[in-house]
Amino acid sequence: MRTQVAIIGAGPAGMLLSRILGRAGVEHIVLERQTRDHVLGRIRAGVLEWGTVETLRDHGLGARMDREGHVHETINIAWRGQELLSVDTHDRVGKRMMAYGQTNIQEDLYEAADASGAEIFFEASDVQPNGVTTDSPWVSFTHGGVGQRIDCDFVAGCDGFHGASRLTIPESVRREYEKVCPFGWLGILSETPPLPILMYANHERGFALCSMRNPMLSRYYVQCSMEDTVDDWSDDRFWNELFARIPNEQADQIQTGPSIEKSIAPLRSFVSEPMRYGNLFLAGDAAHIVPPTGAKGLNLAVSDVRYLSRAFVSHYQGDDRYLESYSEMALRRVWGAMRFSWWLTLLLHRFPDQTDFDQRAQEQEISYLAGSEAAQIAMSEQYVGLPYEDQEDA
Ligand code: FAS
Ligand code: PHB
Image (tube, rainbow, N blue to C red; front, top):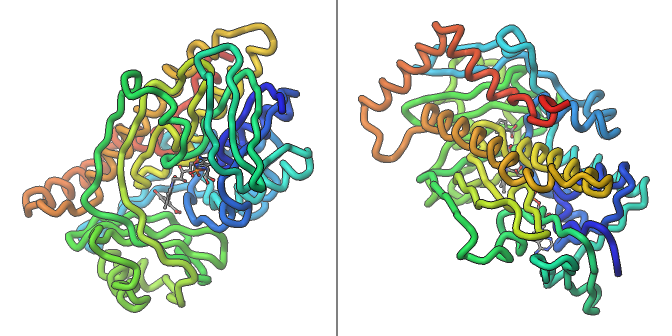
């Protein structure tokens, strides 16, 4: 087979890239290791930066989000057991956030791909980029037991943290940065009305988070040990721990119910530089992982794809300046999100070696946030998403 861009991975990054390239008339083929249903079965992100909302709308992917999504006006931080800091991001920086699950976005992306006839190979195995430092790279893979080859101009590695693309870049070229958190997030979904606000909690027992997916689907998290398994956490234990970490006023608003999904996610910060090697370009989790505290993972995949799709489309219009600048431009935003996510993770979690001094210092920083408009503007502009560099160019 022959195409212009071979996309590895049919998660949010790969499928948004497919959508944007398809609408721009750039030929591409998508290769996905799992089945479509397996990808759709993942429970991941839930909060969208406003730039992500606008990007989805710009590419005809906003209708269901605008019908079913929930616009958040405030970020809320519970602390000292009963205190609640509420920051109105629209009041502070003129932007809001959208609660709309990654699972829904994935469904919308696949529905749009079906409608446009995008070529996707699910259950593609042994996917391997080849010749990426030549002008005629190709991707080899197996599908239905048959060896296949796609000759292309570019390979887009959108295959997540465990994918093959990043490892195609020689170790001598790759610079990797990693910081692993000594705890995880135990998350549940329950078919109950959610707390109307997005609320994080700093508590001496540990972090908690109250979020949503829709008016009858709640998403809650509590910080847990990485030694824990979901079997250690009955629903009763989960609800009791959540209520122990949040103010009574909000706890009284929460309707409990059986969990329909329960999982423990590790927290890590990871960046692999550069995000380009010859004609191989990385986007999304293939190049970076952020702790979910700042709700940046999915949003960074979107910003990478905005920059990368513009680079490919411009190339076929005879302009290679965005190909040349892609890695540096994407990494500027990645590191900005990395720093913000790490700052919020340090502020809200109970680290194993934490002392009473550390706890008081965290509470003091939240108290400072509560009293400082400048501090709230700084937090808001990063949480809702800084402007994209392509918007400044426009
Ligand atoms: P993805 O990992 O989503 O997609 C990569 C795709 O490539 C997958 O479908 C995979 O099957 C496929 N693939 C892998 N190797 C391949 C190969 N060799 N050949 C072909 N295909 C291959 N972010 C948030 O903002 N908030 C959250 O709360 C949050 N929670 C998360 C919880 C978990 C357990 C995980 C793992 C991540 C979470 N994230 C969260 C981050 C997550 O949302 C990612 O940022 C987002 O999925 C990134 O999208 P992609 O880059 O497309 O990577
Ligand atoms: C979620 O709704 O899953 C969510 C919200 C905010 C975060 C992380 C996850 O920071």
